[in-house]
Length: 191
Image 1 (spheres, helix red, strand yellow):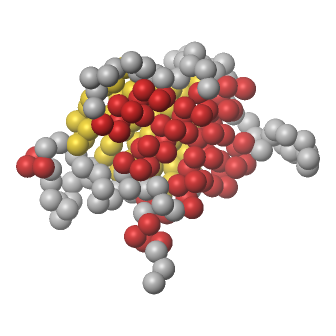
Image 2 (image 1 turned 90 degrees about the horizontal axis):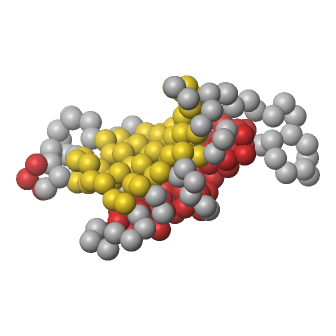
């Protein structure tokens, strides 16, 4: 993924951190939570594009007790996709829908959203939603046509390349991954 520089962590507290410059701080303020954004290293410290070292960036958005968490999570994700150069494909819109579904499921079925984590590297984008219960998500056995609900995990399964859960302590992370080649507009452009 040519747009991903080597990472080093920077933390922002939102809202109201006027000293923090740049789009990451704007996303943090808009999102209303504690955000860890891995910032690019200075040009001299970056590996060359021919360097085989895998570069990875991670962004975190704290959502526990934050009102409007689905909209804030989508805004946060949209900004990350823009920053990473992955905002101009149909798959980027699918990614926003995956984020919405995972955040909504955590809110409705898992004692609320605690954190949204986005991890990007040269192979994939991983979306993780951490919540407050160890109960595993179960797809609704037969969603009824015309009745809302019961389709979230089917949407995540259909739009992502893979998804699963990871239980830890008093919570879990439900995650979905999307291959980087689906997000990179240089590989999907037509002549």
